[in-house]
Length: 268
Image 1 (cartoon, rainbow, N blue to C red):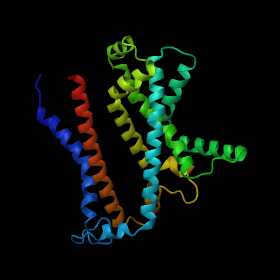
Image 2 (image 1 turned 60 degrees about the vertical axis):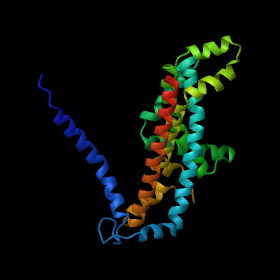
Image 3 (image 1 turned 30 degrees about the vertical axis):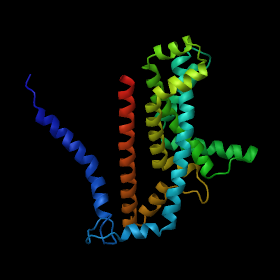
């Protein structure tokens, strides 16, 4: 069989170009002096200064970060409990329903999730007077979605986990809760970190579900950016995107280093 590695490398290179050239163009045009987001007008950092004075974008960014952080933290807690139940407790009443509920949001269109969440919140508000549509309803909807992804990650990590360490700890007299916090939790911490980052990204990036479940004065950053697209994207959005890309890249790099060191320590 005649192998042609250059073809493989060409396909990989084209894939990376397709993915990263648009991101690079956003970063490049964020330093343009032109008022048009896609026209180069000379090097300038004026749009970063203008971004710091745009209260609407900054408030939406802060709101999105709070929603994403709270949703990711709650999703990790629920996803860890769900993954632990599905991987360790064998067959129990309701296992099939729990597995189905964890799989459905991942394959269901966002429009359906947003609409069903809206109908649920409206019904609860009419019956109980709670919740008021706003940040809290967006968080609840995002937790429902992202907890499913965390469950998959934690469950796969628990399935491949060596049980001999936990069994040895229990043989030495440790109680189950102590084994979980001192043995199991540190071993699955890379999966928890990966699940948190994924949940944070999904929540921060969501537009459809947030549009259905938000209320007055609770617009997230994707909603604000989408509303500006209709009138034309300003270079301030490019500057904001550049900052977010830099922070995310730094966070992913740090997380990768931490996960690599923990895995190396575990193997040692």
